[in-house]
Length: 220
View 1: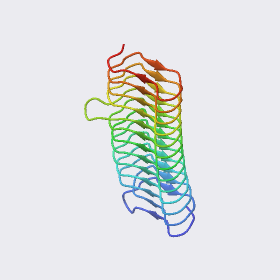
View 2: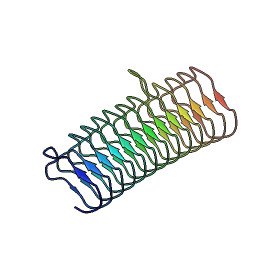
View 3: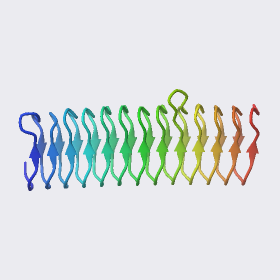
View 4: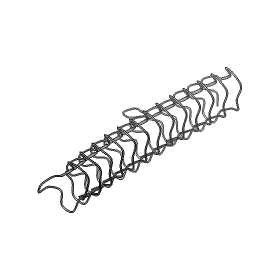
């Protein structure tokens, strides 16, 4: 390898490499860091890679995981085959599988939210135990999680402060501002607009757009 003051853990990082940069560290097998500074691949995060950037971390046991670049991004412990492509202060939390954050700032895929995707934007959250969901961008959007009844296979295209609540299956908010699909609203759709609400347990409901429109709870 090359660079300055890089470290490959003595006796515990077999077949790993650091190509360039400074103050980068690897403690896992078959892993690599391309460059940058203060990047770390922790113990037993085998077959992982950090391309560059600064202060990025693949935590212990997060095998086959990748951080391409950016700053302050983290893939937490026991994640499997997860990717952060860039951006700043993005986090894929522990026990995730096959989840991706493509970029943006302060985006989070929470614990055990497998097969989920955040494309970019700022402060977007896919919650705990949510399965197969996506937020492609925007600011402060949420697909909410739960210990036993999370949202599943939801989609938010963008906009600001849009929320798909827990126990909502296969519901969509394309964009807009402050739109919400409330608890247990399966197969629901909001196209855009502002402050539109599909009420609790109002399955198969649609609001195309506009402002402050409401589908009442239990309307199916």
